[in-house]
Length: 331
Image (cartoon, rainbow, N blue to C red; front, side, top):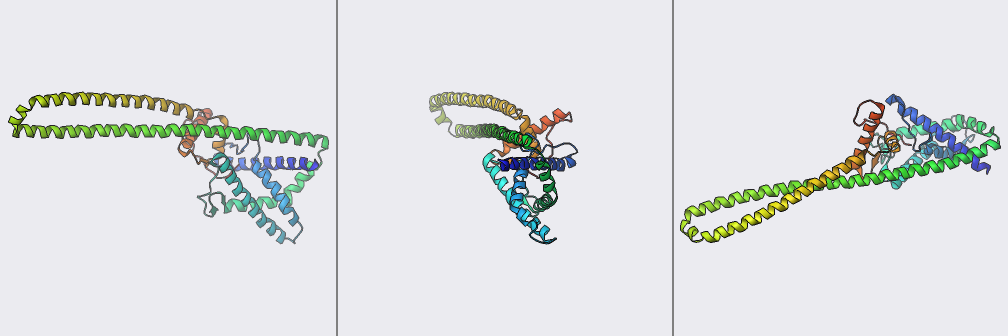
């Protein structure tokens, strides 16, 4: 039981420290506060898991070598471990939410856009600092907390992480559902617009064919006047039939065009409604992860992001339009 309490408290502390560092790191270039948490609360779980992994795997190296060899061993071992954790986290989030949460593709040294050399070196340095400096302080502070406080605190934090994780997960899945709906609407709008353009093109080609036929008929009348006179009754009958067919065809085309216009209007209204329904949590996540992209619904995700950015700007009273976010770091 004591081990479980200790793990929960360590996880919570390092998740909060990671959230604070991430938020400050991303807020400075923006000159405003950016909440970098994956959860709704002030925690980045990946830093909590990373800290526990580093403590469990690398603590045996402490004191195993003389300085500075110990620091070098800790640093490079931490680079490998944190890179593996970051890569695995990227794959897991992508499989779970069908979404890429960060992308290092524009970095010089990177692997599949999931990890990059700069961040790996930074995490290695941070992990070494945690092992040598920060963790002894954190451990001494937490050990000073009496069990009558630490046990209820750890239990409350455990319940909190379960609840917040569940709410966040279902919130993202709901967002994916909206994105799928919006993508379907965008695809249908595109198909109907193309179909309408094809119909108009067919009408134009038909009109040109009619003009050519009439020109041929005029030539035939000049050359074969007698024959036309004899067949006048039949030609008039054919003209009546052709006019009836043409009127029917035009009625069908008008009906199709009217139905298309009505359907397109309905689809565009639904599209505007869905784009305006970005939940505050969705807006926060999109702002926190500016390089986040949907694997299944890329077009609708971008429209959703632009609508969310415009909503944020309206709330802040700083105009409208999508924000140009930057930064590549994760939860």
